[in-house]
Image 1 (tube, one colour):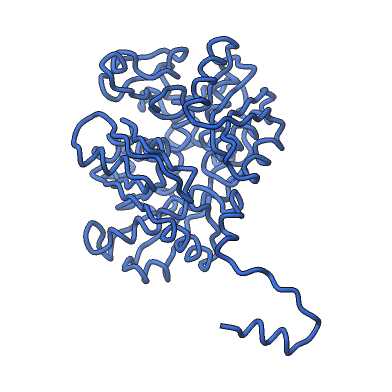
Image 2 (cartoon, rainbow, N blue to C red):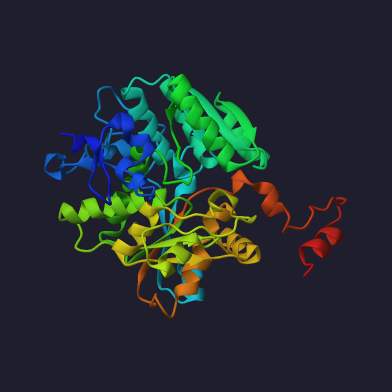
Length: 410
């Protein structure tokens, strides 16, 4: 039996919100001047302890997701991604038990597929015909793919500055893609489209942001479920590349489910890896209100948010975790190369989790801690950024001496 109760709840004031009102966050909190996302409410006593292993993708855990199963869920095989032990990399930074959850193995090469699978299926169950999303790429590609599979029209509002690879991935699934010059412009236009056309939003509407589609966020809970299945226990720390705190919060909610169900005895400490630092600033400030920091360009553009969210801040605090700003582009691109040397090509926005973890070793992290990095997206989403740090490929004659000279060149 599905544990979802059919309504959402504010994590701050516990105000109950209907599905139709959920995309706008908590109204009472907003009236106090604090934007707060809402989350699906569950009665875990109603959940099925173990879904059939034959169920597809993340919907093995459907009883713990806000998809009631009125029809067979649309799945592209998302989830069940590999958990890899980074033994050599871990030893190099002082961690014996460093793992990475390789989310590049999802259908559109990022963990956004988990969010999109749940959000699109919920939209389909709710009678939606058109979905709309504001995105810099990964989110849009995922929504476009799942909307296509579900037979829904899809409109994507992106930025003109996003890499061509991202635009292609959003367009190829049949979505109508338009570019704007700034994030606030996208959100304003999306709000208008939702109000006037009745489109269903797949990403956040609010400005300042409070987080993404509240149903989709719970798709990330399945990462926690899979980690505990694979490890046989909960990690000590989970490091998540973070913008609006959706992945961070969704994974935390999954661990909280497992603790409430008696599957684990403690919740891992959640670590936000961020390029601009609003979570660190907000935690240092000590209050409820998210702090904004100056906007600037970063190679980790997919997560370069200058503002934190309530959900992300509270996830860090409630789990006993922390936030780690990694501001230097060179540090992030070096981490991308380190991971590539281990056989993993991650987007810079995903590779940021490695230097974040490294910076905590010897202080927050001890050598024995079991640490999991969430490798959120593939480097194939932004190859031009990677190419800037690589040599040009030489063209040579079929001469063995010339080949040896180039291959052996230091």
